[in-house]
Length: 198
Image 1 (spheres, rainbow, N blue to C red):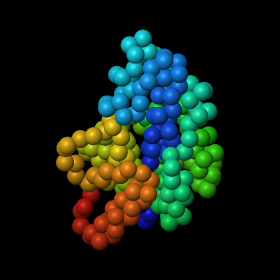
Image 2: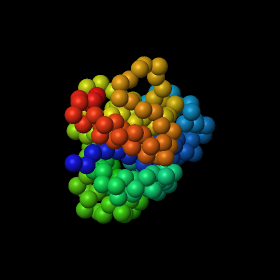
Image 3: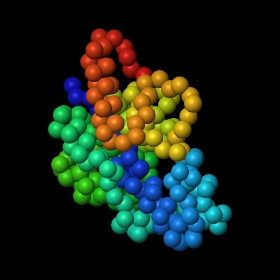
């Protein structure tokens, strides 16, 4: 049975996190950089007059026209798909963004086919409720706690921790994520008769 990999979208497959900052900086005259955002919620770091409505940037057409695919994401997902992994996309987003995300995935990951993407795209406010073997995410809160999956964390300034987290790997790019997926796969194969789940 193929392993299921739950893949986050924003900041993992696309550059939404940095693109939102670019558009915000243009509107506000601010000079906020990704390394300045040391907590998950960007609103805490923007000018006070922008905080209340900052969430609107995530729906802004200017942002969605500019977001790009994260380096190596397409190549690595294509390889994992060809190797037989069951890829699902799980995001915590505004409902209005689901169609935008589906369309973006269809354009940028055509090797999966539009029908496959439609059937593999989920919105979940608590990702621990999703059954998967491996999760690739940047939200630390999605990668800890009572979960069924091994966690691969994309390193970001806002997800730093000194806490020792079981079944957790930190990576710096998609090439590292690919290596981590195979290390976890090998571990699961070696111990298929033992319980090595998180």
